[in-house]
Length: 310
Image 1 (cartoon, rainbow, N blue to C red):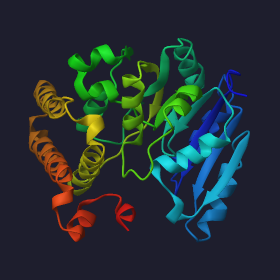
Image 2 (image 1 turned 30 degrees about the horizontal axis):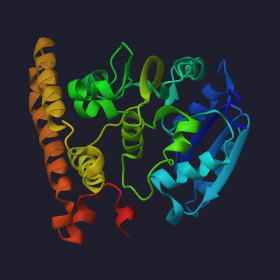
Image 3 (image 1 turned 135 degrees about the horizontal axis):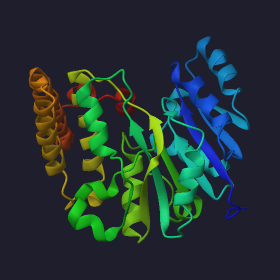
Image 4 (image 1 turned 180 degrees about the vertical axis):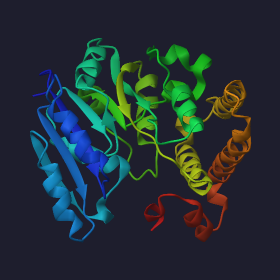
């Protein structure tokens, strides 16, 4: 029965790295323990699957569901796990986040005590293994101070009003059900599409800065291009969600502030790297917005999620 105050954790898993055991260890020591930890394990068809399953069993209250790679869908796989949950709140995590402490679930739950809040997402820290540019980008998107977003913020924040990441986000199950769950067969962005529905339905989204996880990627220029290509594809496919919402200006502001930060830190020699990163991001977004005009072979080549186009 929902409305019980329980929390379930949902984690899609596919070819995890060394971060997954660390994540499980942190989950096992949380001050508020989840009722279940639902792992949606996408199989590789190799001996690796058995090893991964043994790691997943280390989680307290684990429920492991194996799925074929052809079955995986960013929204659909998470919906399938959500259908197994009877908890009032669901915490979605990715396999490559590591909570900073044992209070992550408790902090996010505290944010959900306001009935108007339908989603609470955590702060993502870059860690020390990525460069200073990625660290600044994380701090730009995930500042030290938390805040609550509502429909009234659309004019001021633009697309940032819908910003939310399923790398670490807690959902009120009743609102999730009310909105029909995550969209199906989306290449990317199922979290922001849901967040847009939450805002437009009159609910609020809380950015819980005290709920911290380490999560960052060191993308090559080509990967930056492909990631932004897929991001733009999702915005194009769900144009009714994103049209009329200020978007590109946020990217320009990030580039300007990052350049100023590098100069202030006397890291001017990193400016060419910033220019190249930003250029590849922009080109990826540009072509992604126009993916339906491109040859299919080019679309698949540009995309980071090539299996989506099969």
